Amino acid sequence: MEAPPSVVTPEAAMSQLAVVKKSLHVAVKKSLHVAVKKSLHVAVKKSQLAVARPTVAIPAAIALAAKIADADSWRNFSPRRAIAMDASQLAAVKK
Image (cartoon, rainbow, N blue to C red):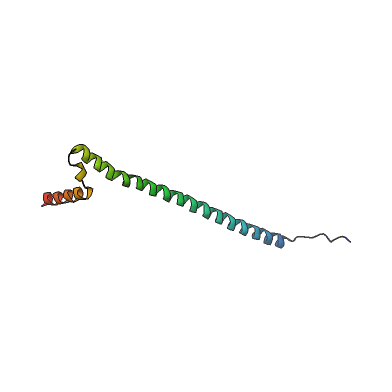
């Protein structure tokens, strides 16, 4: 006995097509979400590194400039004290 040939109605075909379309949409959305998440993670890491490099380099550059400017007292140089002194001098000038 042979099985009767299956006849697919247009409604059934459209229903199957809608299911496939929805599953593809979900899969694409998930993969796009993962790709965006990874690229944002990489961008954040790069920006953190870009900020960290100058943050580390600035105190070293200040100390080097102080060392060059005054070879005798560079060991006593403090960036905080220098900034506070600059701020107080600026306040005195503004008065």
